[in-house]
Length: 359
Image 1 (cartoon, rainbow, N blue to C red):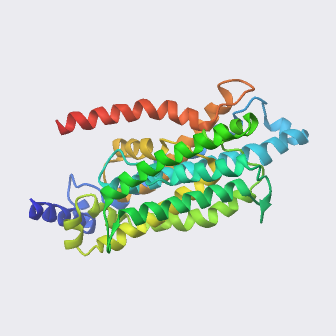
Image 2 (cartoon, rainbow, N blue to C red):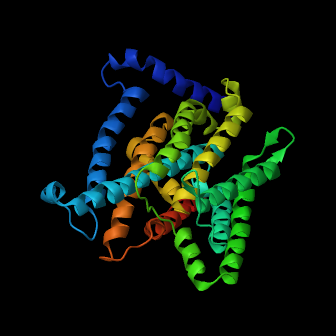
Image 3 (cartoon, helix red, strand yellow):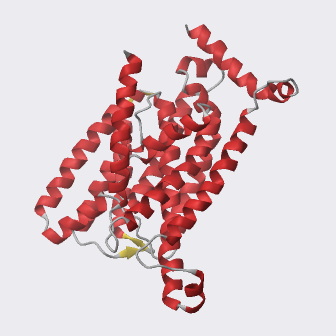
């Protein structure tokens, strides 16, 4: 069985190298690079349309004539809506990319960015900061964001130490310890909410449901300083992830340093999720839904799935935020509630589908 998997993986690797020669013959399949270009050529205009819709959506109507003559309309567009759309795009892209990478690494289609315990730790750190009234800023960053990042980073360290046995990190133990740590952190958040006053308890609840409030681009530039290197890091590992998705023995036999690759993916994914959780709160299901949508549209090749998940994740969260800002008129739903409403039924359908497949 292992020999068969090795042969199959070798054939997949050779396919991309010989695609140029095969394309000269009739009926040949296009190479992975060409298929990736075609997929991105489809998704990038969709991203542009979603961004325009996100800029237009809101209880106050804005048109080109108002932008020429109305100072308030310009402030709403460029200081509120545009940063919010950009924030939604980069958070959605990050969560979807991390979700695709973790599903490949764990070989589990139900994995998502919050199975690492990062969301629980970040939520607990932010809850403590809100309950203590830490409203100050350090170098332009609110203390609530810094506390959330510290909680997320602490969770990463705890989960990694639990899952590590000697020099080996067990993916199953990593996944399970992350889920358990999330449950413990949730209990801690409930305790903090119960002990604090009603106003701050409501603020904690609002943060937990996820939000994309942004005024200006200051926080966004700081996020991108961490996110962009992480994006390129995961995309550079797409070939190794493609082999890890088969099994570890196959990947190792084809030259992949499995332990090093898994550690890099885990470290980069944890950093990316910690940054997004500290700023946007616990926005769930994006990393679960979007990679599956990409696979349904463009196939299973991770060299295509990863970059397309990056783009489609941005589209998904921008549209979800547009719905959150318009569905109640002048009121606003937390974007985490919208993604939960969409993602919950999808998760149950996916779980049922996996059970049927296993049976």
